[in-house]
Length: 246
Image (cartoon, rainbow, N blue to C red):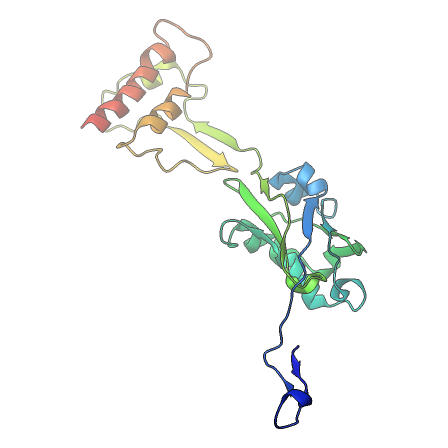
């Protein structure tokens, strides 16, 4: 604050200059660690609620009174909401895990260390890796400046599985022979994917690469001169190639 003394002014009155000058301290740094970062999988959030922790440690700064003495639930909630997905803070984390976090999940261990215990959230389901970042709000630290914790970290989806359904199971080879009635239904193979999603190019004949590779994965464990690998598989993949060329 700048105060002009009365002796320096003709009016003989003290004047306080506005606005005041605020010099901000250099903010500290924050580090993310804990058991969550040791097991960066969707599964630990789905199945091990209350056992996974995110630890935030400050250096050259301390947590504010709003977290240490005159505890503010609003500031604590800001800290929890500071755990966000990249790039825009509107990912699966925000839709599923964030609503399940409450202030009881946050525990301040010291003026420079706190933990967040993650609840079990079965609905947290990823089809692709999700990058998370922690931003401590200004109100949570003594320097009164927001701090981005290092490092960011990536949660990976649970291992995917695929279920194969087909009427061919137990059928003999005649099921694959050309039908006399061309309108008769042909045998089908259905693949049900769980914990992942098909790439957009699968089934897109203008870019057949992924579709051909998928069909090539339907191979027989035994190779015979007139078996699946020799007779059926080439027909499946060649049809895709011809359709794409047309």
